[in-house]
Length: 187
Image 1 (tube, one colour):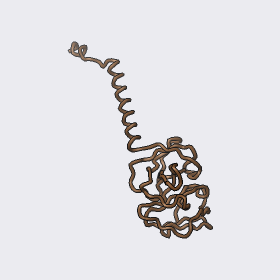
Image 2 (cartoon, helix red, strand yellow; image 1 turned 135 degrees about the vertical axis):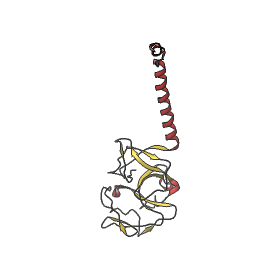
Image 3 (cartoon, one colour; image 1 turned 90 degrees about the vertical axis):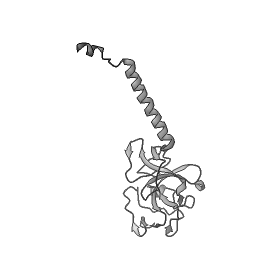
Image 4 (cartoon, one colour; image 1 turned 30 degrees about the horizontal axis):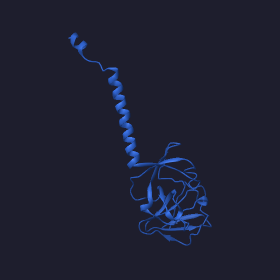
């Protein structure tokens, strides 16, 4: 029986190194595929999403996403505003009506005042929005969390965002590393 123990092969050093290299290469390939097809890193540009996201922070967005929901932080493009992607919070989706009392700074959607603990200050900046706005089919209405420093759906330069222009939903920031519950935005 002792001969049996001696003849059992112990893993060689090279075999262990090969196993480690195989694991590392597999992990790299999975990461590359993930970022090619399912996720993307975006850099926040500007202060419009303060205090949720800050200028130059990097966030990971899901490129595989369902229809944006109220409260999600999304990244989108809007040709009328330029080539840059924008990061904003979804305030309303198709069929919902947004109304803002700029004197009181209160945002209502379908007659209900939004609970917005994520905003920097109340919404007093009108841009060129007038009256209640009903969100068109296939569109969303977005605003930055730093309402008085954000150009967003209140401006005719951006307006309502076609959901086909949404690049993805923000999942988390890379630095500092935190998950964004309920979605938060920047840009």
